[in-house]
Image (tube, rainbow, N blue to C red; front, top):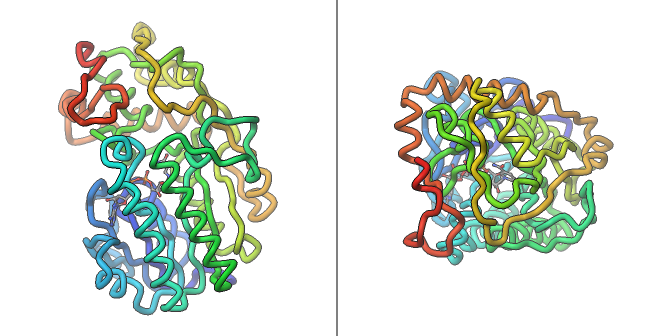
Amino acid sequence: MSGLEGARVLVTGGAGFIGSHLVDELLEHHDPAEVRVIDNLANGRIENLVRLGTDPRLRFDAADLRDGDAVERALQGVDVVMHLACLGVRHSLHDPVENHDVNAGATLTLLEAARRHEVRRFVHVSSSEVFGTAQYAPMDERHPTWPETVYGGSKLAGEAYARAAFRTHGMATVVARPFNTYGPRSHFEGDSGEVLPRTIVRALCGLPPLVYGDGEQTRDFMHVHDTARGLAALAVCDEAVGQTVNLGSGREVTINDLAAAVVAGVGRPDLVPVHLEDRPGDVRRLIVDGRYMKSLTGFETKVVFEDGVADLVGWFSSRPQTPQEMLARIEDRNWVASATSAAPGEELS
Ligand SMILES: NC(=O)c1ccc[n+]([C@@H]2O[C@H](COP(=O)([O-])OP(=O)(O)OC[C@H]3O[C@@H](n4cnc5c(N)ncnc54)[C@H](O)[C@@H]3O)[C@@H](O)[C@H]2O)c1
């Protein structure tokens, strides 16, 4: 495949955080004939599709991937599928069966339908959560997969089905494994809330960062503009077909570092982090070995973490809601298996 020029691209989960930036990336830089989004808005937002209504190439169907008719409709005439729709890691703790149904089950039925429709390329967006805690670092594609949550397990199942479609049917599938992604439109709220946006919202309210455990657990944070660029690069890379590719910045950031970057970005160095108990199943280390991605596509990250955090502080400061309104939508409780369990940390807000 030489490129996406003139192609019809289906983005599942395209109203979500990463999916909506991928939509922007495709429309701005890849000249497709059409970008079609299917998203049931479980966690996505129509406002994330900033070009909807102004760019005639962008279409949106508010439908569930578990709805076979909707999937058939979405795949009509499609050349390339970018599959991002999923339910998140916290959701998997209190509703593991639905999490599996969407992340693994719907991936398999989508792959089967895409094969019938003879799509030219299928990019399955997996997650570094398939690895579990790093057994060595940096983590290359051969690192053992030992997921610690149903979410990680369901994403691993999706990977396996995408690889099977390539092995058994010669379908042109690619598995991309982004590490932690951050940036505008990231989730601070409820089940989907990520540590960086939640910490920013708290700091904007004058509240200290909440750090689970000793804060020395690490993540590989990549800005969403880089993630979207990387996913698009994989979609047009013939050598990536049948391959599994890690996608991250290659920089290891501790949660203590993150807290420091946030309080600096907000201009509140007086906010001293409060340490809570460890999260059950929390992954201790994550850092990518990005050499394979670079050798395949020439990809390099552009956004430096501290700059991206400062920008994100600006983005959250310019939301129509006040920081206090956003704070009210955060669940600052530890990971729990039931939605009704205790909520340590609430007393801080
Ligand atoms: N955010 C990260 O740091 C990160 C890291 C690694 C991998 N990923 C992967 O990237 C992808 C996108 O993640 P995100 O952070 O943008 O999450 P997100 O929740 O913002 O996006 C997922 C989208 O899928 C939609 N969705 C959920 N269930 C659906 C269903 N049954 N039918 C149709 N749509 C449905 C949601 O409404 C949402 O818009 C996911 O596959 C995720 O596993 C994300």
